[in-house]
Image (cartoon, rainbow, N blue to C red; front, top):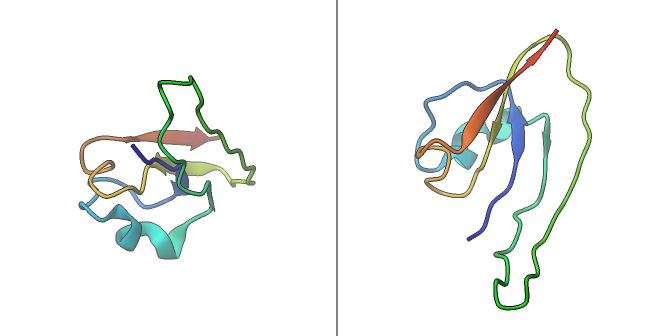
Length: 78
């Protein structure tokens, strides 16, 4: 299954198409990661860095339905 990771100050709840809701306020993101191949044990990884000011931010998977089902979390920068 595809996944990605986006950093945004937009808080939950997120709609089915979270990408459309948060895309104008993205502070960092990975591309969509392709599905892993469990037969060969191959999986993909990406990384990125970003600078955040003190505040509350959220990491969110933008794939349709994922954020709506709870694939997000909170980051607190002090």
